Length: 262
Image 1 (spheres, helix red, strand yellow):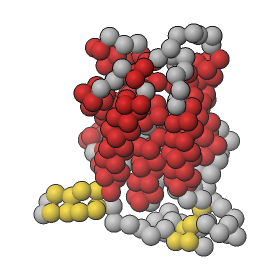
Image 2 (cartoon, rainbow, N blue to C red):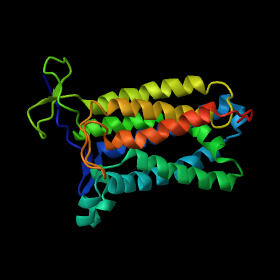
Image 3 (tube, rainbow, N blue to C red):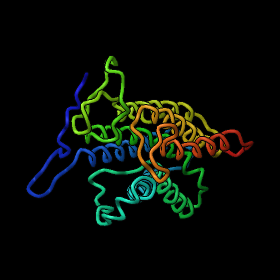
């Protein structure tokens, strides 16, 4: 069996200042957003986006990700813990960012930017949807480096079964890497190909919701479930409950009849 390397979560430290791998992974995701956004704007003029627009979208998106992701972790997964340790709510550098909370935060941020720029909400989310998965992939790599979000117990014969020594001596699925490959790389390829030509407004957003929701739902069967506000369940986990509305909303966007273009 493989052994988790137990990386030092601090990449670089200078005196009292420390740069953590988790933060660097988020930075990598933001850089990917800018690079892909500029390329997408250049080859798809129907979006009518320029470099300043993409910079603004990133600024709004970062606020949505950080604030929403942290609040999602607090409200959806660990309300009891943070109620007892309220100051730790602000210690996002320690990890603990819920995707579904971050997604809701980004939705609010994009709605504000859409209103400011005179665009519709789905025109904005259709543009940014293919730019997101590589950032998700980087975040999952950060989870793996931190040795968190470990998987369920696996068959010891599984070639990549991994022991997380800080958890227990049992072989487990390296689920953060599964999610990096699925919700990250695979979803990026799907969305980038799907959005290569002009689609009805809301279609690309719908594909993102269906793709992420379905891939996350599947990945939860290999990931040790979180307690969440509904308690601990190995049948339908908190992550799966939160993913189901995404899939339903995504199918609605994909199937609705619309002739509007981005």
